[in-house]
Structure formats: C-alpha cells, structure tokens
View: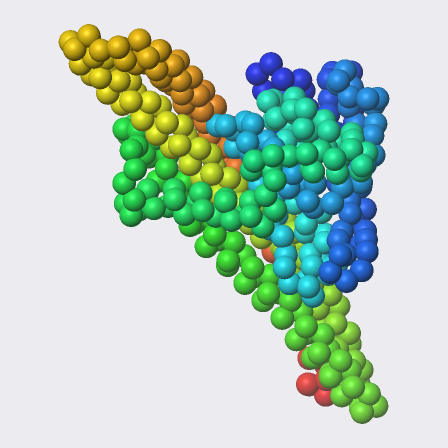
Length: 403
C-alpha cells in the first residue's frame, strides 16, 4: 500500500494519485511501457515520473526511462545496504518468450513495478536512499555506469541474484524445519514470528492459487457464453417467427454477458490475484531479511566464542611468559572491537525488524481488506448483472413456449 503519512522522522509521502501539498512529498508513477529492440535483445522500457519538493532532488518533476534490470539494481542495492529492513519485492522475470511481451504480462509487471517503487518512496528510511535518488533522476548513461561500477554481490547477474534469494529462502526453511542446525538465537517470540511467516507464505500461496483458478473459470465461462451466443443467433436466423427472434435475443444477451465475465476476470486478475501474489513475494523478502539476521547472530556468537578462546590462550601465555603475549593481546583487542561491531549490527537488525513487522502487518491488513472488498464487490455486481440479463429474457421465452 502507499502510505499517506511518513513514519518517524521521515517526510510525508503521498500517493501518486493525490495532489501535491505544501508538506514534503515524493510521488512516483511507472507508466507507458514500450518494447525496445528485437529478438533476444528486446526488452520493455518504462517511463518513471517523479514529483517532489525534497531539497536533495533536482527540481519538482523528473521523467526518466528505466528497464526491468534497473529496478533489479535498485532492489539489490537496498537489500545490501539496509539490513533489517523488509525490502519490497519485485515481480518475477518471465523467461517464456511468448508471454514476455504479451499485453497482459506487460501491464501486470508495470503495475507491480509501480507498487515496488512507491513502497520504497513511502518508507521513512528507504526514501532517503541515495540509490533511490539516482534511480529516479539519473539519465540512462549515468544509470548504466552506476550498474557497471558495482562490485561484490552487485556484479552478479539478475539470474544469479535470484538464485541467491532462493538459496537464502532454502536455508531459512532448513533451519525452521530442523534439517540444518546452525547456531541460533534463543528467543521464543522470534520463533513464533518465524513460524508465522512460514505459515503465512503457505496460506497466501494457496489463496493465490485458487484466485488464479477463479480467473481461469471466469474466462472459460465467458468464452463458452460467447460461443453459445453465436450458435444461438445462427439458430435464430433459421427461424422467421417469434421463436427466431427470441433465439436471436438470447444469443445477444449471452454475448453481452460473456463480455462482462471477461471484464470481471481481468478485474480479478489485477485487483485480487496479483495483490495476493505480491504478498507471497513480500513474505519471501521477509525471509531473506530473517536470513540476514541469522547471519548477523552467527557472526556475533562466533566472535564472542573466539574472544573466550583468545582469553584462555593469553592466560596460558602469561603463565609461560611467552614472547607471543603482546601479539596475542593485540589480536584480542581487535577481536573485541569486531565483537562490539557485530553486536551492534545484530541489535540494529533486531530493532529494525521489530519496527518492520509492525508496519508490514498494518499494511497487509489494509491491502488485503481492499483486495477482498474489491473481490466481493465485483462478484456481487457480476451476479446481479447476469441475473438481470436472464430475467429480462424470461417474458419473451415464456411467450414462445406458451404459444
């Protein structure tokens, strides 16, 4: 969801659909997808429009062209820099050529990318990121240079990074399922959170699967009604009396209802199934942050153990008055400093995750409420429209059957 109020000390961030006010604002929209290039080199570009009065931005409005790999760059940069923050998820990259450039896929991706960048823009910490500012304002050449200058994890291809996220999820799953027994923090409340996240992912994935089936069923029923309508109209053409006229009207109504079913199927896809799928991805992002927390705890624990062993070694060296004592003491001080840093990193991740889970729950409650409300409203409207259409035909059909 897009918050209308900033959190903490961050500035107020409005929805891209709301008019700017005199308060600090940052609004972003992703629009106008366009196919660029041909063959295997073809890709979709998007127009990213930013409106803001943040002082660090160059002017009140900026329009840039971005492609999917630019969004991946932004996500990876934020994931590496903001440990403990739930980085918004990206839509999957389609590898199936016939779907990659379909109008439906392009629109679903555009909508998901719009949600992605606005979640970042509405986050009180992420909205202050220099990488977000580069993404929203840099020209294409500067953006390309920024991507090419990355080192370490940022040098990896998008496919490699997706594999990293999958490996992270697999490792967290192994920990929760007991397949792997690394050093873990002993925290009953955190254990409850981990179990909740895994159950939430399963339940969301199951709901999304059945939502997809609903979309498919609406489309199939719509197509069947369309085919039936054409057939009945042809049947009506063979009749020159009132029966033929009734058949013709029945066919027309069937085709009209087919259009309504197809429209409702599209509405279900974009406003019900896609939000559910987006939250499945959001939970996977949380699991990646959980893995980062586990890594930070392990580093903290291992350094604490190393400090203990180093203290034992120094005591032995003191007893033997070894010449190596000074070197050992120097290593001990370095280990202590590293241990303090590791403890601070872990505590910061814990603090941020505690804040993030509250924010996530609040947003999930609102977003799921909207999605299910739209679902129920659409189904009620469709049912009423179909009932009205059939009801209007009954007098004419009854007149034919009684004559």
